[in-house]
Length: 209
Image (cartoon, one colour):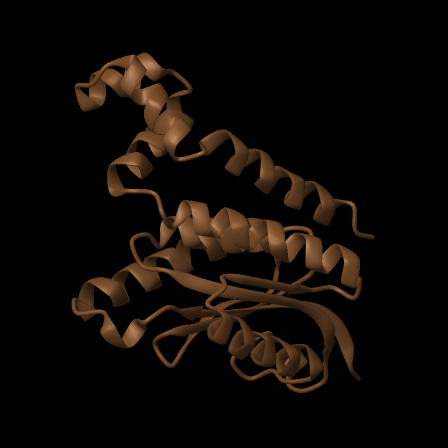
């Protein structure tokens, strides 16, 4: 019997041009395992790697869909990945709890959207059944992703440590730079507006019934 679930489908960007294949494959596996563990309770079917450059998963609810995709993107750095999340019916192999075996309208839509955002060179697409909200979430998520994927490696390192410690002096000491340089790096990366925008997405998704 068909049932509605939230599907996530991801595609690694320019995977064919990645040279260090062993490093890439190890990173993809490690991030997949980490996300599956962190969000264990949210998965109906955990993230499965398909064809070496695609992933798919099925969630019990849509509330954490963006958090899962965002965390995957950040942990997967420096590699890039685009995501689609769709809420719709699954009518094949639902009982297997294996996303690679399942099929149905949710997956059909997700794959169509994935091709669409590939052509548009976007990073996200949401379809949860409300066009106004879906378009708003999609727009914000894409803008945030464009900013984050423009971060330099040093900016990302500074941001990661600052978010762990919440103290600029610790970051400054670790990187042997001034606190002003830390502050400037956070501003250049638009760190505050990025996190505030992400929180808007998370808050909207939490409000879904």
